[in-house]
Amino acid sequence: MKLRIALLVAFSIAAGSVGLRADDQVAPEKTLRAGIIGLDTSHAPAFTKLLNNPEAKGDLAGVRVVAAYPGGSPDIPSSINRVPEYTKALRDMGVEIVDSIDELLEKVDVVLLESVDGRPHLKQAEPVFKARKPMFIDKPVAGTLADAIAIYDMAEETGTPVFSSSSLRFSPGIAEMGQGKLGDVIGCDAYSPCSLEEHHPDLFWYGVHGVEILFTIMGTGCESVTRVQTPDAELVAGVWNEGRIGTFRGIRKGSANYGATVFGTKGIGPSGGYTGYEPLVVEICKFFKTGEAPVSAAETIEIFAFMEAADESKRQGGKPVTLESVIAKARAELAERAK
Image (cartoon, rainbow, N blue to C red; front, side):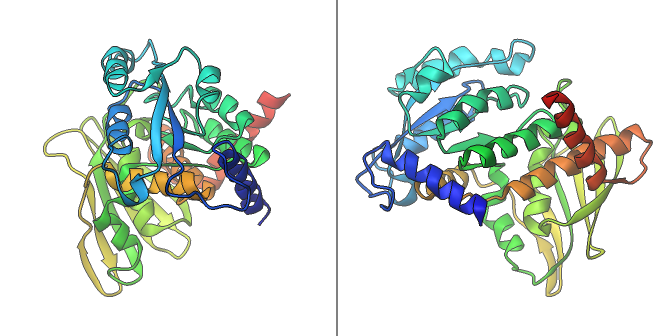
């Protein structure tokens, strides 16, 4: 309840910056000015096209990207090499390109942290939290589990609304399975492409999409993880607190897609897969207008603990690793940083 009140207070402050009283709802004619941090991902121009479409209707209306800070990570070619192209794309759409995050924050009401590299997210998020601007953080929420926890701790401390998610969570077929289309979920086998990036824990970079599918359908409550890896594939099995089993298959060879097979009390069936960015952007707009996160901090932290536990299982030759143990280790790391 305390966090809920804090989040609503933070949103009231953000709303005030566009001329609203604390007890007002965002009126359709009031446009929230959005800023983007990180122009090294295709999400930046894709989200901007949706938000800045003059014919946008419903939930997509009322949020407009007005400024962006390019960023980019020099040690990741797929990051730094994209910055010029996407910077030009946003400039061509009428978005102002600024030289710093502080300058960006002077011009916007809400923030999309889009940097493709999770490592700088904590540092990039700090000034946003200090300014108490509602923020969406694209996947991965951070480059380490400790940083992910630190981000949500800072959100709570400052009373700033924040959430992170893969677009797969809101694809209709996947969302329906999590909402009970096949009854209570007994188990789930999720899958997605799973390319690796040397600066991130194995599953953080791209496997996060499939793991997000798994948690969307299974929900929270995973206790332990066991992992098997080959050059071409990942297989991670999680045991949930009711004895349910959920698996993630990461694909690096052959046909690669997104989806899941779901085992429910009323049937077994496929979830359906990726349907584009719009369902996610709709949820981001709702979040910016209400301050209510569609994905809890606890669930996102559990997703990243699942992936960190998978890495630890790999280091231990495939032994089961509890999520509790990796979260405790991450908390201890944060305590050391604070000294």
